Image (cartoon, rainbow, N blue to C red; front, side):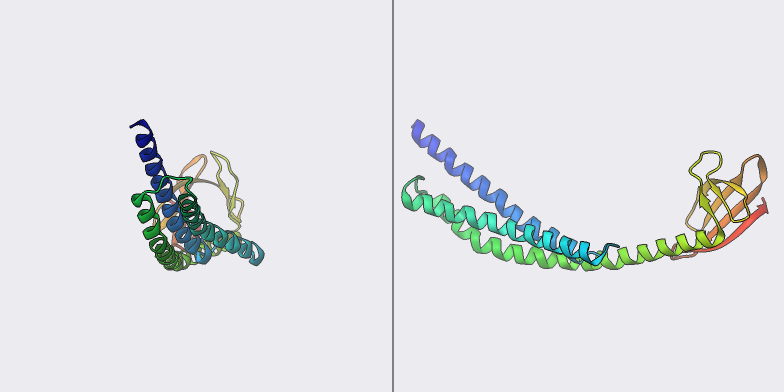
Length: 198
């Protein structure tokens, strides 16, 4: 009875490991497809190596599971592992399903990556525009607490509020003066008022 129980536990362990590798064979291709087409503001060489890296991981995910499947079949045929219909059927049926799921996961990842690509490119474009706007206005981040920014006229400013349509600055030592950056509906900075009376 003890030997039978031990073999049963071994069969269950093989199924658990196979299930974990099945999940890897699906998750890794999805992540690879997503990361390959998802845009990042990097150089071509870095993008190339990143693509190769994720393709290797996607292949590794499916390859590990297939490798385990063949090892299990080999051990069963050689008599090193107690033959079990549960193990044989589970591994045999999982092979084609895993390959199909890996392919579908890769396609799903590519589609998600294309969707994220548009958003990331748009966000990066807005970031570059806003930085160019700040440079044109001479607005510099000072990194302080009481004086967070200085504009092109040399006015010392304290960042007070960031809203959807406006960024408000106060002036240290003055309760009446303010400065505003107006934000367009797409998130781009449109105009800077300079110091104005509140």
